[in-house]
Structure formats: C-alpha cells, structure tokens
Length: 270
Image (cartoon, rainbow, N blue to C red; front, side, top):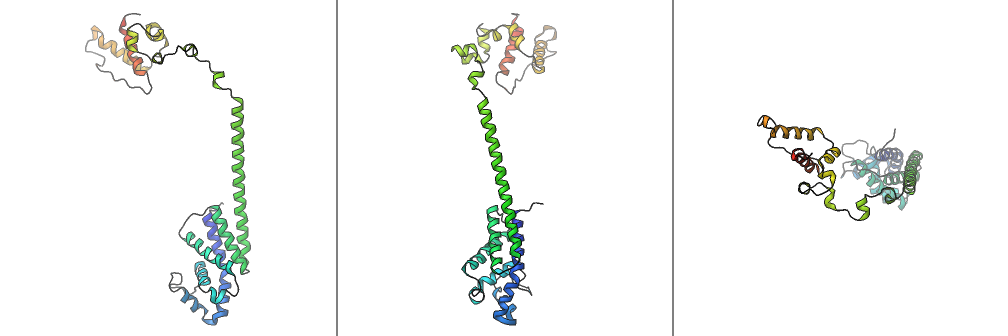
C-alpha cells in the first residue's frame, strides 16, 4: 500500500530516534556519569519535551535539542560542523511534521537524506533502512517522471498525426453561393416578419408553402397554432385558445419563426 511523504518522514524520524538514542545516552553518560539523565532534564526544562517524563530520551525532538544545546560541551569532540547543521535541519523537519505540514517529494527526499547522513555519522544500523526508503522514493519519482514523459510524447504524437491528416476547412467545406459570390447579406440570415409582409426576402420565409415545408412542427408550435385557431374561430369565440401567448426559446430566431407561422396560417395566401 502506498504511503504519503508525510508518513515517510515520520518513519524516518522513528528510525532516527532508535539510532540516536543509544549514541546520545552513551556520550552524556561519558561526560556526566550517573547524573547524565538529570543533566538532560535540565537541558529540556524550558521546553515541553521533558515535562513530566522520567526518560528524557524517549522523543526524537528531545534527542536533537540535547545534541544542539550540548554540542560544544559533549558532541563537538565526536561530530563536526556538517553534523550539527544536520541536527538543526532535522529539528525544523520534525517541527513541520508535528504540525502536519505537507511534504513534497523533494522535501521528503531531503529529510530522509539528512536523517540517513546523521545516522551514518554515529554508525547507527538504522541508516541502512532509511537509505532503502530514499531509494524507494527515488524510484517512485523516476517512474512518475517516465509516465509523464510517455503521456507527453503520446499526446504530441496524436496532435501531430491529427494535424498532419486534416485538410484546412476551406478545402473541405464549400460556402453557400451567395457567400462565395460576395452577395451575402447579414439581414437575410434571420427571418424578418416585416420583410415577409412586404413580399420581400427569400422564398423559404416569404412563401407559406415553402415555409411550412421547411419547418418542423414541434409539439409546442403545433399547440400554439391550434390555440390560435380556436381563439379566432367564430364558432369557438371565448371558448378556447389563450388570449396571451408567451414565446420563450433557448435559441435565436425561434420567436420570429413562431410569429411567421401564425402570419402564414392566417394570411389566406396558401
């Protein structure tokens, strides 16, 4: 089961505690003798790390703080400036981890690498396990990068293939005659009720037979026409048909088309 970067960092901190614990205790005991535990508690007295704890070395944060504060007095004789930098860096990592902050893959790898270097410096066997975690994280990163490159190459291949096989639309679609000849007028694109009343415009709007031949009578349009007939029929005056019709369509031209249908229905031309 895949684990998160936050969980990886937490696991490395557990291994760090297991590896640093014996080392820190050994060095404190060598410097302070049997009073080493009391000395460690004094170091942690102004923090929450040692409050109410019989064993001061049960927390990785406590181990790191003791190493940092007792560096000149205890650990400087064994470790160098690089290791002290690692201690301070890992303290910051531990604080981020404790506050549930997210870790990117780069951040997680650096945290694991710093923990592994510090463990190696004190000859702790846990360094091998942290190193394996580093390698596993690198493998996952490389696999993800490889998948990303593969997806990118496939996408580029598809795009290039599609682009290379498609002709320009001007070579595929033939424009209407009036567009090709330059006689196209924007006003003729939509129906114009007044133009039809004047007997002008194209035949599909002006001629009732041609208009209804080209018009698909939807249920709503048929209902409107039947209601209008009932409303205007002398035999059914006041007995049927709505006096007011609300025209509402989701596309342009629908309302004008409905008015043209009414116009042609009662024009008496056809």
